[in-house]
Image 1 (cartoon, rainbow, N blue to C red):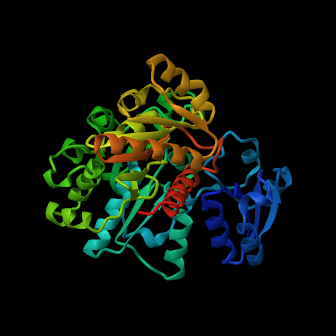
Image 2 (tube, rainbow, N blue to C red):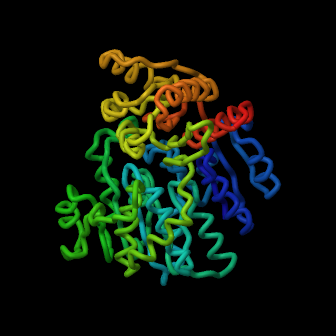
Image 3 (tube, rainbow, N blue to C red):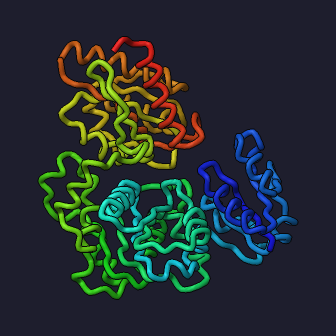
Length: 439
């Protein structure tokens, strides 16, 4: 069998797909427009397993050669090379055909923001209770990794918790050749304007999200604004469609982002006391309102995954009792900056990372609002040092604990490989500052 990996990618999905098929002695070829230097040691690892590479270009002959084309999510379905493919699969269309999932309860989470945290905390809680559970999806864990686990160890899971982006749902709609599996819980955390650089309009974006609710599901959780629409598209009874933000959880404190996960877990008859207990051992998700450390009454929080302006606002108001020094800006996704206006106004200081969003949307808005800013910087280290210097001075003046919050409200590609690289550079900048200061 000949397999073509269409897009190796930088987040591990192409690597997992190639590894899966190579270890099963398939003939694997990988095509990507990026150069060999973009992938570091990944190329040599896959070559040692027997993969061949076509880099810097795509060729028609490779698609005609392949029996199966594994499509990277970021590649548009309209790509001309896909028309040449005999069969197209994605990681999830492949995984969901695995017979070992037949007795596994699927919990699928989508939404604009909060889906990774929701997926992560659900998985953490189910593991704490003692269930056999795995998570995968848009957070960077390929479904091929789960397929390899199921096949290699002949395992079965009690639960599989999946995080889906709109692009992954779009691809599943197109390439799931067999009927979708039964879904125990389908949840959508929220809908905000996003990905308008790749979607024709918001209706198409919402349509891809709501595809999840067209199938046989036991429970649907969603914001109130979507309940009527989901009732129409699903066959669920009204009592099985639940407001994902409902309930008062007194002991949750400032961790309001966990409320959707609480409500999903309660559908599985897990009591609140047990869920509260698991919070004590939950460390959160990297790059999503992630506490990095503190230097002289200044705490550093990595929220690099905030790639839309509304996400900045959401993160900012977790820290209303502190002085917030915001690092923001980056690459344009064809979105407005207005969703972060209150955060911009209420920040102690604003430090900007350079990029098309910063230059074309953010700086004009700041000038319109009469707000001062530092930068824009082309280096995360310089931006972080600037924000820390101001935060330290603010603490000395006011004795109010300070936060340096990286919450960009934009994409990352002008300066960084992706948002995870951006968050990693922020963490490295914190360590560099800490190393030079006698704490």
